[in-house]
Amino acid sequence: MNVDVSIARCENYEPQAVKDALLAVLAPINGLDWVKPGMKIAVKANLMMHMKPEKAATVHPQVAAALCELLIERGARVVLGDSPGGPFSAAYLSSIYSTTGMREVLRTGATLNDDFSITDVSNPNAVAAKEFQVTNYLIKADAVVDLCKIKTHGLMAYTGACKNFFGAVPGMRKSEYHYRYSTHEQFANMLVDLCEWCKPRLSIGDAIIAMEGNGPSGGTPRRMGAILASFNPHALDLAAAHLMNLGVTDVPTLQAAFERGLIPEDVSGLHLYGDLASFVIPDFKLTPKHDVKLWGPKNPVLAKILTKLFASRPGIDLDRCVGCGECAAVCPAKAIRVVNRRARIDDAKCIRCFCCQEFCPKGVIRVHRTFTARLIDKLK
Ligand code: SF4
Ligand code: SF4
Image 1: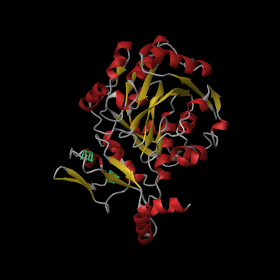
Image 2: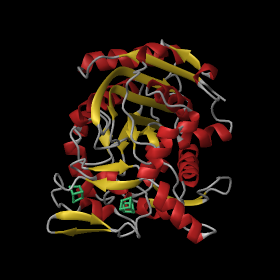
Image 3: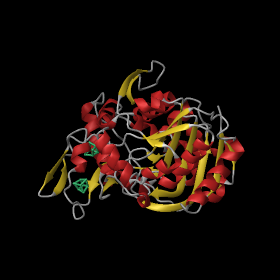
C-alpha cells in the first residue's frame, strides 16, 4: 500500500503560482518520473456540470492547464476529458468545456476529448461493480491521471479523487447505478471498484478553493489554499477529507477503501510531505449527515417506517426554484415533476440518491434531515 501524500500551498489561480505549486507538490514524491516521451495520457478532470470556475464545483482550468503543460514538457500526448451528468455527446461536452474554462488547456498543446465511444467492461474481482460501462478515451490511454476537485457531497459526504471516477461511466447511464447500488455501502464500493479499475497513475486534488456546505454543486467556495498529490487516490482522499474534519467512518468511499486495505485507519498512517495540519479548517461546513437509507429491504414495512423517521431527503427551497426541470431530468426514480414553475418531489418514489441536489443549477436543493434524526442528535 503506497501511503505517500504530498500537500503544498497555493493561494490563488494565477497561472505561474499554480504551476510552481504543482511542481512543489510533485517534487517530494517524484510525481512525474513515470511519464515517458510519446506516452498517451488521459487526464480525467472533474467537470461535473455547466458551472464557471469561480463556483468551485469543477476543477479549475489553470490547474488543468498547468498539469497538462508539465506532462507535455515530459513528452507526453495529453487528452483531457470527463463524462458529466448529461448526455455523453460532442455537443454537450463542447459546451461543458467552454463553461468550465477547459479550453485553456489547448494553449499547452493538450486536446479535449472528442471520442464519445464506450466499452462494456467485466471486472470479476470487483466487490460491487462486476459489469459496467466506461468511456473509451480512458481505456485507450497508456495512463490515466486523476484531476479532482475537493468538495462536500450530499450523498457521500466528501468527493475527491475516488468519486471522480463516477465520471468514467458514460453520461446518463450513471442514473441506473443509483438503483443498482442503492445503499451508501454498495454505492461506495461501486465507486472504489471503478477507481481501482481505472487505476490512475497519479491523483491531483485542487483544494486551492474548495467547496463547503451544500456540495457538490450548490455549496460555497472556501479558500483552503492547498494542492495535493498522491499515487494512491484513496490516500489523497483521506488527507483531503481530514482538512474538512472528516475521517474514514464519515465518508463511505474511505470506509470501503479502508476495508480493502487500500488506506490506513487515519492520517497518522499516511506518509505525509508538507504540513497537513496547517491546512485544516476547523469550521469547515459540511452537508447534513445521512441517517438511514433503505429501500428494497428485507422487511418492507419496518424499512418504510425507519425511512420515514430517519432517512435524509432532498428539500427544495421553492422560493428560489426557477422551474428549469434539470432536477426532473436527472432523477432516476422519475420522482420529480415541475408544476407551475416549481419542482415537486414525490417522497414515495424518491430513492434518496441526491442526484437532484447535485445537479440543480441554482443550488436550491438541500439534504434535509428529519425531525426525529435531529432530535436524537440533541439527546446524544
Ligand atoms: S433544478 Fe433546481 S431550480 Fe431547476 S426546477 Fe429543480 S429545484 Fe428548481
Ligand atoms: S427526488 Fe432527488 S433524491 Fe429523490 S430519487 Fe429523484 S434525484 Fe434522487
